[in-house]
Amino acid sequence: MIIKIFNLYRATYHYSPKRISNYFIVYFAVGLKIFHGFLKKEYAEENLLFWLSVERLKKERDPTAFKNMAQTIYNDYVSTESPKEVVITERLHCFVIVNH
Image 1: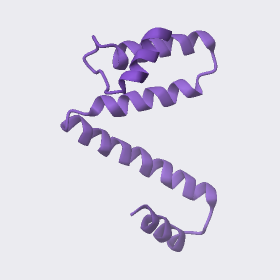
Image 2: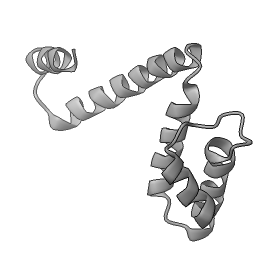
Image 3: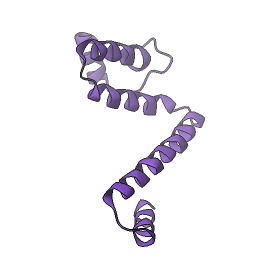
Image 4: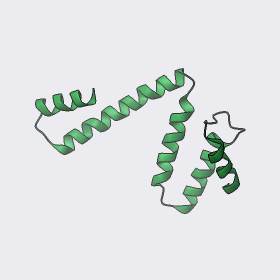
């Protein structure tokens, strides 16, 4: 589907990497919202929210903000007391607990 959209866009408009990049950013955002709605309906929204939080954490450069975001991710998605706990392997869960 994405390839068809790309080819249609490239054939319809003057080829410009910046224009195509902007086009896909918009479609990615729309697709992400649709996917988020689907996951929410299927009671699996926490997996997407966890992934998005980790992606934001990867971009954080301020050590204090990084630590605060990591703690929030732990509280929201990893802690066994979290209402939005994600499913991770037991080995990874033990690693996180030991290094928490």
